[in-house]
Amino acid sequence: MYDKWSLEVLYSGFEDEKFLADFAAVDGKIAAYQKFADSLGSEGERETVKKALLMDEEFEELVGNLFSFCSLRQSVDTSDTESVSYMGRLMQKMGDVTKASTLIEKYIEKIADIDAVIGDDELLLAYSDRLHRIQESAKYTLSEDVEEALARMDVSGGSAWSDLQSFLTSSVEVEYNGEKTTLSAIRNKAYDADATVRKEAYEAELKAYDKIKDAIAYSLNSIKLQDITESKMRGYASPLDKVLYRSRMERATLDALLEAMKEYMPNFHGYLRAKAEALGHKNGLPWYDLFAPMGSNTKKFTVEESKEYLMNVFQSFNPRMAEIIDRAYEENWIDFFPRNGKVGGAFCASLDAKKQFRVLTNFDGSFSDVSTLAHELGHGYHDFMIFDNRPLNTGYSMPVAETASTFNENVVMSHAIDHASSDDEKLSLLEGQLSDVTQIICDIYSRFLFESRVVENRSENFMFADELCKIMLEAQKEAYGDGLDHDVLHPYMWACKGHYYSAGLGFYNFPYAFGGLFARGLYEKYKQEGPAFLEKYNYMLKETPVRSVEEVAKICDIDLTKKEFWLMSLHSYDEAIAEYKRLAKK
Image 1 (cartoon, rainbow, N blue to C red):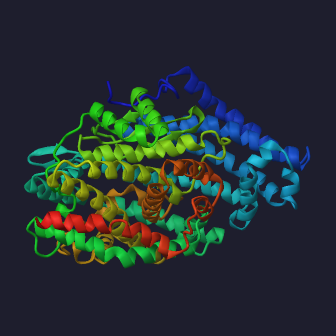
Image 2: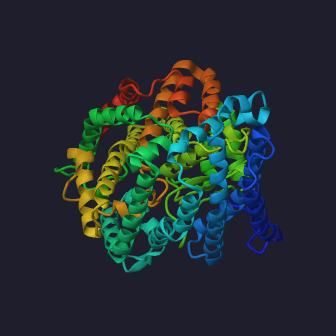
Image 3: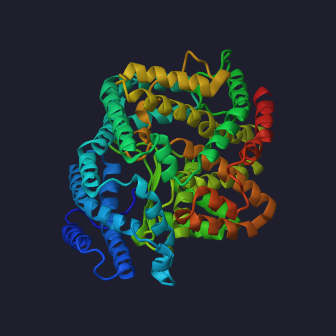
């Protein structure tokens, strides 16, 4: 029953009359939008702003449906030429909107008293934060002609380079044991119980990158230079400052987070050394054993069993979450299994206009995959909390994007550990928990270091693949310390992680650490306050599109600019690390 997702709620295919009609309607909407932008103010400030917002809502729904359909089709088949073609045509059409939208924003920017315009109007009050944000962002907005040019150039620039990386990593053939397989399949073998399989798969993976490393290096260099150039043009001090501003996050929060991570990191190094010793390694853990299973939790879940497990966990904890999980499975919102041409990893995509979402995974039945499903369904839960907001108030920033998803992981993992039937099973579950949190602390820190150094170097220098590998290895040594064997690391982590490959979304690394530790702190608060906390939690999620990260945290009585909160979240793992060391040694 469960296999591929259904996109019927959007369109039945590219030949669907509704798809063709909607695609054709985009040009008319753009023309009306441009005409409106050319006559701004003719109806007075309040009516002009209201009309602009309503037009934005209509356009957002139309284009959102088309983009979602094309991108979701492409994600499960990167060789789908129709998806690529329609996506490219949509991107070109969006360039036609940029000039008009910039004119509208500049009109709003110049309103002397925006609060007087808003008054008690229901629509404008709903978009009060958006309107104030537009005025505040004026200093980073370029002229309408330049904004249009940037949008048009990105189609054949950053977006094209990003598509190239995605295509290469999803289609490259990996030679393994005399057969050919995909990167997604070979990377999944990192979790295999057989040490020989893990090592040989790791070696096969690294060899595969040799075929595509130069093209991906060009992609990364081009994307980062575009980001640096645009950041300077807009007046940001750096691409990181641009990301923080757009994330609605203070630098003090990032500094407090990173400081706490560095202070606590030796504890995760200790976990890695304990694992290395248990597996017979004397110089730290080699990369190919980073995800080696421990203990004896070898149970494989069918898709049906994964649903039953998640429903059992969440029905008592949060019935609303259980209801959403049931719909996701029964209404085919999930694309489960790896196949040739399908992108690796997992993600959740919101279909705002339809009040639904879609989840992509590469499910192979491990408990880790069940945890991944809980994570992605957490994103979907977050979406449901904001579906009642106005259509333009549904986009939340990168840092809080990982909150509900990681909160779900904490719920599932804590339940599993508490109900472990033996020491072997408990060791296995603790391994899964500590492996995941080590990724969002040590690995994410290595990615942050890598991207920081690439951005720093790219202004003046082009970095070939070998240099990028060197920078990555240095970052991994610094982040993982003596927890890993420095002679057996992963020099190509820059090539396989799609998070680096967006000209408009740099530094998509620290939000994972933020989300992981923020969610952990929220879960600790739930344990203190009980089910009554969920009402506060749901309201916080609903407010994420219209408040800064510091403001939404205050809803739950948290000060993110203080290192103490982050250390509290980290120290909640003390017991798990100590118990892991005891069981691993035993």
